[in-house]
Length: 460
View (cartoon, rainbow, N blue to C red):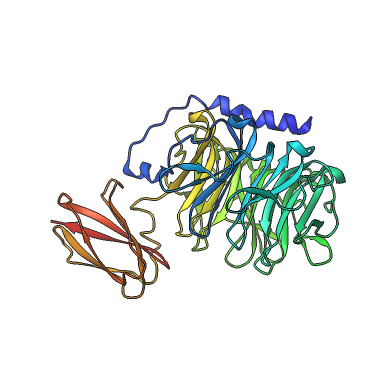
C-alpha cells in the first residue's frame, strides 16, 4: 500500500501542470533542444534511465505503458529513436528500470520484473537479442528501486530495496555464472527507499537511500571489502530526503542530490569531505520544490542537477554549481510542459542530456540536450584552433595543430546551425570549409578527440 500511495502521489503533478503554456523570448531559449521527436515512445513512460554507448549514441530505458507496461530500450540513430532489439522486454513496474553500459560496450538493463513476482532481473543486448544475465528474478523477493552499475573490474551490480529482507538495502553482483550478495543481504539498519548505487574510483560500491530509522533522512553506506559501513553520520540530511542521486566528483568524493524536506522541499546537494557531509553551495538552492532530482558531473568536473522545477510550473530545469553558487544552465523550465522521471547524463563530447516523461506529449518519453553556439565558449579545450581567412567570403580553413578534427559546425547569432560536417578519420589537422552564408557574425564549433572549441567567424 505504501508504494501504491507513493506512486499515485507522484503522478498528481502530471495532471496539475499539464496545461501550462510555453513561451520563448530570447535566442538562449533555444539552447535546450529536442533529440529527435518529442514524445517518441509508444505510450506513457515511467522511470526513464539515460546512458551513452562508447561511440556516443544516447540510449534510454523505460517502462512503456503503450507496450503493455513492458520494459523498452531505445537509441537515437542520428535521425530518429529506434528500438534496441525487441520492442518490449518482459513486463516491468514503476521504480525499477536502470540502464548502464558494460566496459565492453553492451547495454544492460535492470528492472522490477512483473513476470517473476516483482523480483530483480537484469538483461543485456548481445547485438541481436536481449538475453538474461544469470537467472531472471534472482532477488529473494520483490526488489524496488533497482539501481545498476558496473564495478571497475566489469561485473554488473544491482542495489535495491529487498522485500525478502525486511525492505532493507541489498546489493548483488553477477560473478559470471550467478548473482551473489555483496556483503550481507539487507545490510541497512531499516527500510531503505530511493536507492542509488555508484562505485568510487578506487572500486568500492556506495549506496545512498532514504533511511526509515532516521526519519527518512539520507544515509550513505559503502562496502569496505568485508562489511557495509556508514559514510559519515547516518541520516545526515536536515530533514527527510527523497529522489536521492549519488555520483562521484573529480576529487573522488561522493556527492548526493535530493529533494530536501528540511529546506522547503527544494533541491540540495551535499558532499562528504572525508569527515562530514557538507553543503555544496546553499542548501535548498532551487527556486521551488524539486522532484525527481538526478545528479551528474560534467567532464570538466562541475556538478549538475536536473529536476522537476516546482518554481517553474513543474517543467524541466537543470542547475550547475560554478564553485560558489548554483545557477540555471540554460533557461529555467525549458521543457514544453511539465516533466517527470528524470535522468541526466553527459555525452562523451561533454553535452548534458536529460530524459523524462513529457506531460505536454501525453507523458511519453522525450530527450533533450544542451547544444548551441553558446555551449563550450567558456570551456574550450586545450588545443584550440585557428580560422583563416577571417573575415571570409565563401570559404575558410580550420586549422588545429594539436588535434585531429572530427566535426565542424557553424551557428548564426540566434543559435541556428547553418553548417555541419563530420570529418573523415585521418584527414589531418587542417580542413577547408565552403559555405554560402549572408554577411554577418557566426560561431564555429570544432570537435576533436579532446573536446570542443568555439570561435567567432565574420562573413563579408
